[in-house]
Image (tube, rainbow, N blue to C red; front, side):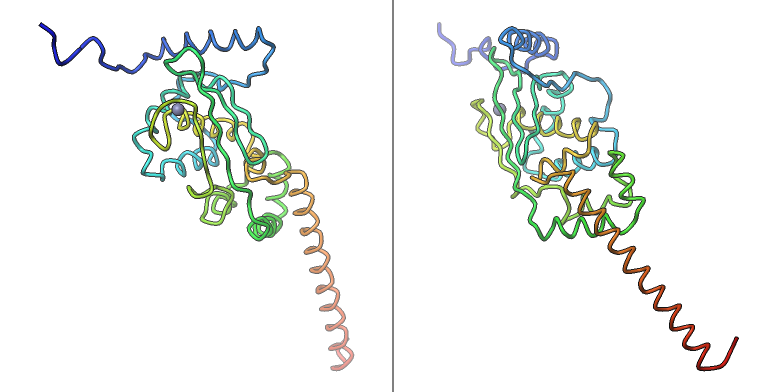
Length: 243
Ligand SMILES: [Zn+2]
């Protein structure tokens, strides 16, 4: 007698071992084809990111409540090393994620470039303190600038400023592969926060140059006002005849 339920056809989530095995096979076949993949290596630490900016990136991602169901799986995927290639380019991310199918899925994430107004505001805030500039040059984000990067008008894209695409058949707007790549971006940012600039279409070297120049300008105009004050004092001395 035929059955309505075919229990042996039930879908199941692939195990971590299975995903890793497939990911390794895909990576070595890419190597044979001389393709340059930049993988997110598998890891077992609880938190995806260790720096404050990387953690802020993840927190920002988790604020998109709509995607909550896929985020957990995305986390599992990135930890398992399924993101076998992730390249951050100007305003976009191109990645390959190993799934259940033999061929990895292609993921593309596009992020709107930062407007000139927002960019100028960030430069202005960065250049207020020389310590901030020194930290940026060292490749770190100063903690003082937390709000600047993660705040409403900061470098983080809002959901409206991100679009993504995956070659898998998942109907969800953000599938687990895209979620894995989003976490993978966090891992990359942890290693090098300057990818934030790249993601928002900003040339980091130029950004630092402009910020340094405005810092120097501010210092020079400060120096001018000090000189004026000294002259004013001198005038007062003359006026009141005080030696
Ligand atoms: Zn997908």
